[in-house]
Amino acid sequence: MRFIKNTSRIEEQDDLSLVAAYQKSGDLEVLGELYNKYMHLVYGVCFNYFKDEEPSKDAVMQIFEELVSKLRIHQVQNFKSWLHVLTRNHCLMALRKSSRNPTVTMEDNFVENSDFVHLDIDDTKETQLTIMEKCMETLSEEQRRSVDLFYLQEKCYKEVADITGYDMLKVKSYIQNGKRNLKICIEKNSGQ
Image (cartoon, rainbow, N blue to C red):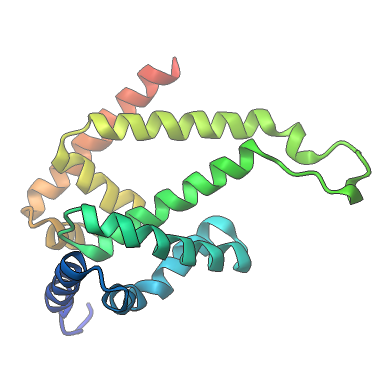
């Protein structure tokens, strides 16, 4: 059991006031102050996907550039969670794009590149990801949010309940039913 002061509500309020200030003024210093609080987490998520320091650093900067416009138009209730989803989506899109456009250097001397040998595997993964994303959209809002937080953002039941405001028993139910519905949808759309 951890005995750490729960400052998440205070941080959320502070984040929301910074989001509101940025949306009202468009002041990049305000956005920078907000983003700076979570930049290390954004880098961690990027590094988890790219497994390389340089693309991860580039992605951190690209995500900030995305925030400049996206944060002005989206209603954000929990900036940290919203930023995590934005970061994950950015990384997935970058990985998809790079798998569609493999590069061959001159050092390869036109020898068969392993990237080309495994394109069918990458296509399969991409197809599975696309199906999963579409199936996530078929879930109810409560199930989608709970499943996303629990499985994709690796939050525990209590954290999901705290973030969403849902009752703990409801969270467990949303996750269980969402997982079942997701599995059924994926199997139906995968032809299994």
